[in-house]
Length: 462
Image (cartoon, rainbow, N blue to C red; front, side):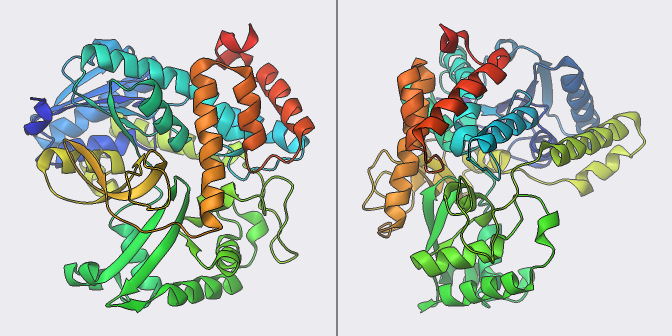
């Protein structure tokens, strides 16, 4: 029986230098009584960053007084033996290459406000990262076959599909922090006027508030929102419309923020359903990406700019350094951080806590008019046996067509990368909802293969 039935799991983090995950994982592993008698193993190919995160973890563990064991290595095979969970959170210079993806794609008429999930940016990020994910999965199958692999690398759906189809010997699911629970329900409860403050959100409110969200990762929609039998979607939509009218100066904000409420309002008017995570959903629709521009009221959001991400990373590493050197007392770490989605899921699985999460997994009938193997983001119950999606109902016409097109792109991308097939790569690019021209697709593929040769497998150049 896997050790995840015990209170001493071994959690391996591949990509421990991920500043959006590593510090929170340390916090959760120390603070959770279901995890802090186990082992935290940190892996990162960057020895300097690994050393900093390992030093931070040592200090936090010592300050907590918990018996959590710590391992660290630049080689994952040094620490995989005995693992119960393997979290994948790595990326090879993602900010830089996303910038290249966006710049070259825009040159050929394909604008991307994010560039790491859909469009040429999503396809090429999968080409850079999925081969290493599948290599990790092979090591897991050989060294710790009972472990759960939790993918945290974008594009989430492509990676999840790749693991399910091309690493079937490992147990896996994919995770995104775009729909954190219970925060997402609380946010929509406030927009609906059900509660005025977070403190008013009780178990009774939660049980009465029926919120159903489904779709491909980053392209999810609110299919039902009702409170005590009353439809509250119009109230949420009105709150969004009001916020859109109040938005000013959006030309100066990042691409993930610009025009979100106005875009969400237009999507609601067009399809009759609200996007659940507008900052990501807008990446998938051609109206504001690719060559599109919806109206004079909503210019195309700016393309993704890597410079702010560099500045953010530098500030985060400075903070880690300050903890390690004592500039910031290590005792303040617990107050400054909190749990992360991946370790929250692990805690629930190990502790049998019964908390639901939005996870990326096979549909298995949750959305009644989509295939069982459609890889969707769904509210799931989960334990050590894996996720079980809760019923959602049917995906509305119009939205279902968009979902299927995105799934085709993601599935073709996963197959192209797993087989290193140029024909399938081109087909994935031509299926992508942001690409409108055969010539553009061919030019983008050619130029990105040249620009990113150093990080792409050699099979693309044979």
